[in-house]
Length: 280
Length: 280
Image 1 (cartoon, each protein chain N blue to C red):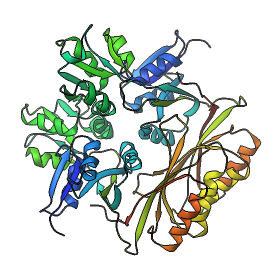
Image 2: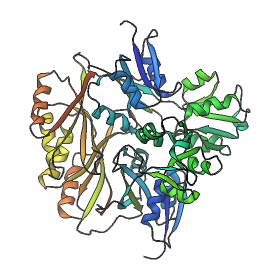
Image 3: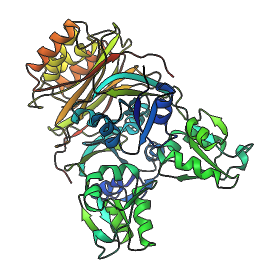
Image 4: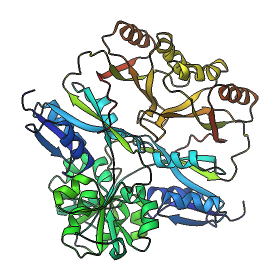
């Protein structure tokens, strides 16, 4: 592939930056934006060729805002997926012992993910919230050896600070699923997945979701994800997000989607793309 | 009801504090904790009678960590639900005009929710992230008139600061669903909902979700929410969260759950509780 431009949800040093770093060849230009709106906007405007965004976390569930963007933005499709192992690291000055640490800073959600480690190993350190993990890591540089941060490996690399302990999050095997967005999805490879969104006119008809799944079951199409989402108009006006095995150009998948359109007025294919099973 | 104690995810001034304030009678003691672990822990230990936690947001989707706690914590059941309208407010010193504001602080997620308002009305104000909306609001008090914050009405009340503009979030009708937790769920009232979690032994059998929904469809039991969730062990090892209309003691619901247990090794009833439709 010739060098391309790819946008990601920044700033530098986040897990999404790390995923982009792993995914994109060295000669690609990586462009970070602080708002999802701009990450996808750059793709729609043609300023970048691809975008990489987190879509699902084995601990944190769906990354909801991003799914909303996909539903609302035409001309953007999913053309790939990537699994990244999420490891929170304790980052401090060189040679710092756990017993020296009096303050640990990070985004409150990251501190919460590492509660067991912090309770066990540095129970007396004050936990102080910051707006981002990256801010917490950079602030360590200008402070005394008593201050540490919780954040991604890539933030430590960028700040040129050592990692004192790695993998300190309570739940191991914390994997985030990222998707690669572009103006078109991926051609069929023989081992593909498809993501769709659909909704019904009337949510109060019992059994309509059951009926919608029948054509998938009949053709032995394996569902890998299902989620009902409030549509935002009022709580309870739901849309359904579905991932399943197969490419949208497979004859059985085409028939299934046509059948679904008969009774679901909204059916949007978000894209077909090769299945990824390796965790980076 | 005699006065009781209720725990909530604090600190004071958050939307959960606001929901607790609306839900709990005036003479109840409200106890805020900064970690979900402690909110539920207080209930398990008998230190409080009830707990109130956010479970679903019409913009933000499921509040995932809390669902995880419910799945993992025996002896805690859902005994009620409550819908709270979420309005972000622009909070500043008395009489401040939008044109005076040079800095707006809030949690990055709240700033992002109000992007259109900020872009349109105070495009030149710097947006600065804080660890919480409450921190942003309290910092306004000690700063010049050029500094504002985005946060809940209750934070403005507690800080004794005026609301300059209300309802500034991009998406209107932003409703968060809270659940009331206790050691037992609610007796049947005739208009009830039940929340359950279930999972299969082998996720790769096509059609098993379809089969699981058949008994619900056959008895005309209306599903109000469905979500597959990675179980955390590895991405793709899913559990299903289901909300449906009816009480677990209804004969048709009992039969349905017994049928589900025949092929889903894990079926956990999180609780039955009266349906709530009014938005507070």
